[in-house]
Length: 331
Image: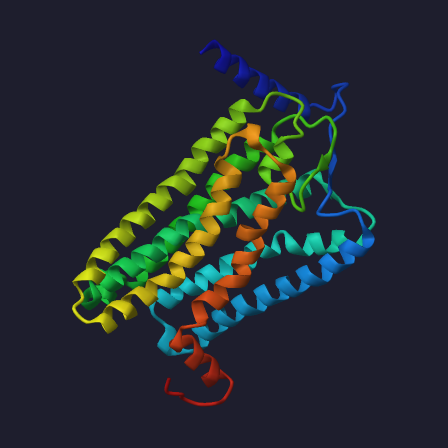
């Protein structure tokens, strides 16, 4: 108990010292993001690859948002949630990739302390929002399959908006706690972040004080934004599986399962790497491995989501052809 009190006092003292310009201690005013390579040729190749990925992600998710907004037949809870997911993915990837692209070509890879604070906050806010929003999408599938006749009665537009707003509030508040505790630590050098953006664990490793208390706070937050949502999603799909088994026709079972396959694929691609980075013990921290793993839940999920959700979706295909001027198409 005494150790906990001492750690809290040390953290508060460090925060006060950081805000006091009269101290003799030199504090970091900017960070250097090391990225993936220091070789100009390699960086030029990575720039082209990541630029194509970023443009594809923005265009793909933007296309889904446009189609859902323009086609009245897609004005249903399921496609409303898909539209929100696309907005989250597009926003999330935009918080990190444009700066990474600039750093791949620029001679300087610096980011100001405030800039790092804002990037960490926005990335965390959007990421946590997406974590909790997957639960809402799982609930949508649960109602659609287990209570198909009452789908529109249960999932009213008012409830859809409330659920969506709740995930955004949860995400932005939780990220505020994570960012405040991380950036309140004293950073007195070095200032070289071995990452391509200001991610919490990578920045926190540079703090010049013991960070076990902050790691404990992060772990508790991770339980709320990872373990609890995953548990709710698993519970939803257990009920969904039981409902699918009761369907007599094989065709009906396949159709019901196909509506959930896309969601399960995206959830798996997002949660597994994110859980590893934020819930693994600090002793197993590996900057190079973390950079590569973070690409999955930051970059590749935003790229793959439009493909996964639209590849086998007849409604999305029909809406696309309708917008392109090909009229109504029967699939």
